[in-house]
Amino acid sequence: MPYIDPERRHQIDEHGSKACSPGELNYKITMLAKDYLQRAQGPSYKIINEIIGVLECVKLEFYRRIAAPYENDKQQANGDVYYPLDTSTPQSLDYIVIDKGFWNAEITSPINRELDVQQYGGKKG
Image 1 (cartoon, helix red, strand yellow):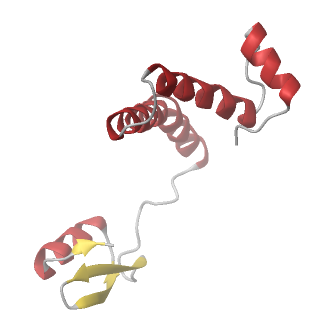
Image 2 (image 1 turned 45 degrees about the vertical axis):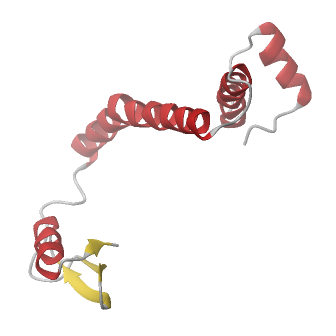
C-alpha cells in the first residue's frame, strides 16, 4: 500500500530518494498515476482506462522480461513440478460454465480443457 511514513514521502518527493520497500515502490507508482490524473484535469473513463492500461502493460512486461526468465532458471536448477503429467489420474477439477449451469469436469490436460469447452459450448470458469 502507498501509505508510507510522511518523512519517507518527503524524502522521495523532494529529494528523489529511491524506493527501499514494497510500500515505497507502491507510493512512487501511485504518485506517477496521481500526477497523470491531475494533468488530465481530473478523472474520466478515458483517463482511468489509460492509467489502468499502462499499469497492466508495465506488469505484463515486467513479468515477461524479469519474472518468467527468473522462474525458468529456477525450474532448470530445481526441476519442473508440472511435467511430466501423470495422465492416468485427473490432475485437477475444473468447472465449465454452460447455459444450463455449471458442469463439473475432471480435466487431465490443457488440451482436454479446450476440447471440453468446445464440445459443451461453455466458457472456462
